[in-house]
Structure formats: C-alpha cells, structure tokens
Image 1 (spheres, rainbow, N blue to C red):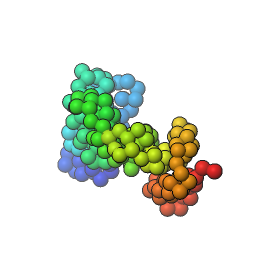
Image 2 (tube, rainbow, N blue to C red):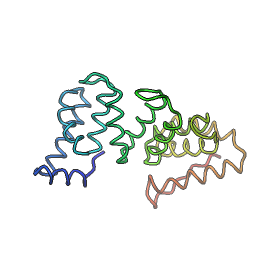
Image 3 (cartoon, rainbow, N blue to C red):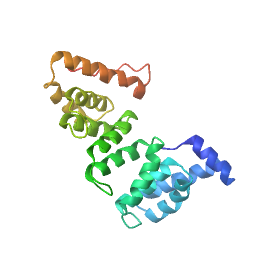
Image 4 (cartoon, helix red, strand yellow):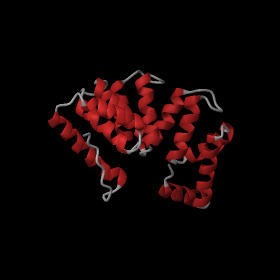
Length: 205
C-alpha cells in the first residue's frame, strides 16, 4: 500500500523526487516477493524509518518471518504497529494474529479482535474472516452470531469463497428477523468497499 502524500513529503525532506522514493519502495517490495530479503531490507528500512507505512510493513514481515534477519517478534511488533497506526490493513491484521497467538506479547484475544476489526473495516478479507470467527466463538468479544454472519457476508461479497460457505452455515443459526437485520448490516458496508453506485445483494434465499 503506497501513501502518495507521505511519499511526496519524504521526497521533499530528502531532496529527491517522489518518483525515486516510490521506486525504492517498489524495489523493496518486489525484492521481498522474489525472496531477495537482503535487498528488500536495504530498500525498505530507510523508508520505514521515515514513516512510509508500506515500508514499515515490509520490515515487520522480514523480522516476523526471519527473512534475511534473525526472527525478532519485538521488532516485528514495532514495525507492524507503526504501519498499523497509519491505517495499513495487513499490518493491522498481522498485529491481531500476533496478539492472538502470543507471539512477542502475552496472548490477548481482546487486543487481537481490536486489530482484526480495524483491518476488517479497511476491507482486508482475511481480517473479516478472523473477526467473524471470533464473534462466532465469543473470543475476545461478546459472542454474536449476527456479527459473525455480517462479517462473513461482507467477506463473501469481496470474493472469499470460504466465507460464502461460512455465511450460509451461520444463517441456519439465526432467527429470520435476526438474519434480515444482519443482512442489512452487511449491505451497509458495501458502499465503503465498492462505491455508492455498486448494488450488492448479500441475502441468502
């Protein structure tokens, strides 16, 4: 996820063009994708230190997985946290995963659910699935089958095939009035992810 405004400001501070900064970021992300983790760190770390959230997320992933550097949950949490606070959805989700599993922090389902929700509200489908699961189980949140249905329905509309199955299974647990309310709640999220002109039907016949 690139941040054009932040890239422009960083470029101004460093006295280089925004195109050059974006190019360094693209190089770092591409290097990660092909497994050149040393180059990824070399490209992303300076940008991460200057506040580019996509670069911070990249550095966090390197530390979280021990790619090119020794695995370090503390550093992963630091960089994920910085990116997450700036709205990077995948960093938010990964923070939730780390809290849920107790990686580098005490296991904390409440904190995990908080970060899942933030990422889910930014349209990150894996987080929507995770949030639906914690609502269904009542793990870190008050149990709500309706909320679980709603997030599975949203994830289904965003193209997750597993969410379609989960949504339809959970629908069987809801009274008709609760199901209709959950469907309306799911529909209310659609303009955020698809735009006001996108008509989306999330109802199950």
